[in-house]
Image 1 (cartoon, rainbow, N blue to C red):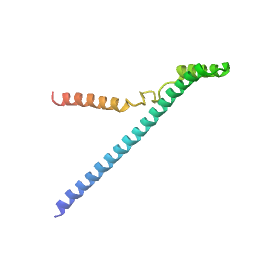
Image 2: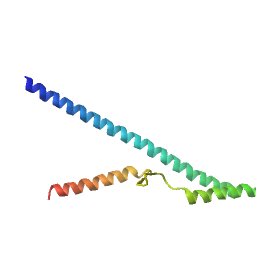
Image 3: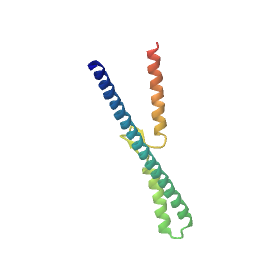
Image 4: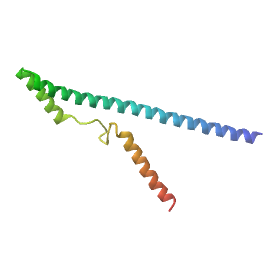
Length: 116
């Protein structure tokens, strides 16, 4: 009986470890999804601001306001770039697709080595 209890305890510990790992992965996926959504919302707002500046610069009578809108658009074109994580990869809606692509490629390479 003692031997079976040790095996059952070992399986319980392994199951708990798997639950913790999957929970941790799930948490990271949720946080990454929230970050990606917020970045995409920010990019959308930047594009909308530039569009509004373009519309208002054409419709506004004041030369000073037209110059302000033109400078905002010029600054946006010159300085704006999408957010990056340590300049390694861009944080945008395509990030999960790039992750899945890399995962698939490396899985195929590992399988080729395993079966050769």
